[in-house]
Length: 163
Image (cartoon, rainbow, N blue to C red):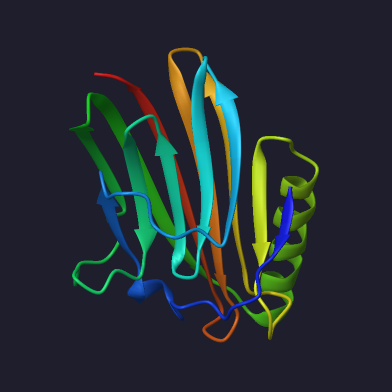
């Protein structure tokens, strides 16, 4: 699913992002609900990146004003009754490779019924994309946050299982 977002994105580089679990639902500029393993999973586009909601639990990767920490490269925690495995990486790409990678992500996500891609105005490379799927014993998703002005692409991968 593809969404054109009519606001500029609030975060502007990878270092602005932080990770939080269990935050209440934030105002979404676009959302897409999918059923995985009989659970509703909501993929939400924020002006400051993304939020994924699974039942009463949430993962938020965004520019959060009350958090000064950055994204962890890898983390495994128990949160809200779920065992969470999170990983993130920031790629620094020149304009050609960033454009190529963003086009591939947007195309693949637009064709997947369990994905959502948001395009922000001002730069065709400014996107946030989320894609979810079932794993044998859990649910997983990947996200991509492109920051063309900084030449950065942040990729995250999360796997949740019952604790």
